[in-house]
Amino acid sequence: MLEQLQYTEHPVDVLGQAKSMMDAGKKLVLVTSVNIKGGAAREVGSLAVVSQDGEMVGYMSNGCIDRDILLQALALLETDATAKTLRYGDGSPYFDLKLPCGGSLELLLDARPDHETLRTAHQNLVQRKPARIDYALPTTDEPASFLYSPKPRLAIAGRGAVFRATVQVAEAAGFETLALSPDEADLEAVERVSTLPPVFLSNPLAIYSLPLDRFSGFMTLFHDHDWEPALLKAALETDARFIGCLGSSKTHSLRLTNLIADGVSIQQLERIQGPIGLVPSLRNAPSIAVSAIAQVVEAFPSSIQPLQQTQQQNAA
Image (cartoon, rainbow, N blue to C red; front, side, top):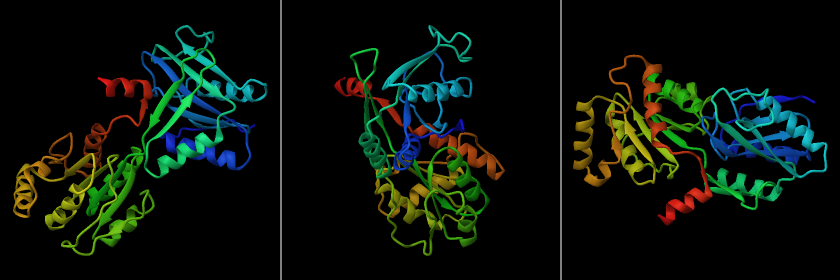
C-alpha cells in the first residue's frame, strides 16, 4: 500500500479525486469531520477520501493525526463494517495521539458512501452550484448534513509585476483564478498558474461579460486606469461578492467620480472597495499581492455550512 497523503483543501477537489477513484473501480472511505470542540486545523464538514491502495486526499489536521486516520480507514476496508466514528483529543481512547491545538475532533469514516451522491455533489460544485451531503452517524439517530459552496473564483484584471504576483498568490490561497490583461507577455507569464484560460483585453472601451457569481470576486490592478471603467461596469452587472481596485485614495476618488459621470449609481459604487490592501503604502509586488488577497479572503465566508445551523439562521 502506498500510504500517501495529499493535502487537498476544497471539497470540490476532494470529491473530484473520489470520483476518479470510483471511476477506476477502487474501494474508498469518505472521511468527514462531524464535530469539533476547541481549536482545530479544519472546520466541521471538511472532507478527505482514502482509497484501497493507501492514498489519502484531503486532511483533518496539520499532520498530527492524518496518518492514523489513513490507517484507520484502510483497516475499516478490511472489515464488513460500513462505517465508524473516530474521536481524537479530549475523551479519545487514542491517548498517545495528541491534538496540540486542544479540544477534540470527531470523524465519520464511511466505507460505503453513496457513489451517486458524491458524483452529484461534485457535478454541482463544478457547475458552481451548492451541494448538499447528508451523513448517517452510527452513534446517533441525528443525521449530519452539510452544504458545500463552489470554490471561490477571483477575476484579476491588470498588468505588470503586481498583476503577475497577485494571480500567483490568489491561486495559492485557493481561489479559482481568471486573469485578464492587455499585455500578452503578462498573460503568458500567469497562464501556467491560473485556473481558467487567461483573457486578452484588446480595447479599453469594449463591453465585457464577466463569468462572476455570488461565489466570486473581481479586482483591477492597473496603473493606467483607462482600462478600468468598462471592466468595473461589467463586474457591477454580476453578483460578485467582492469588487476592488488598486491605487491611492486620490485615484479611487477620481475613479468613482468618473463612473458617476458614466451613469453608474451611488448604490452601485458602494460595492467597489478601494484602495484595496490591508497594509497601506507597500512598495513591492509580492507584498502588495498578499495584502490585496488578504482583503479578498476576509470578504468570503466559509465554503462549508452545517445545514442545521443554516436552517436555524434562516428561521431566525
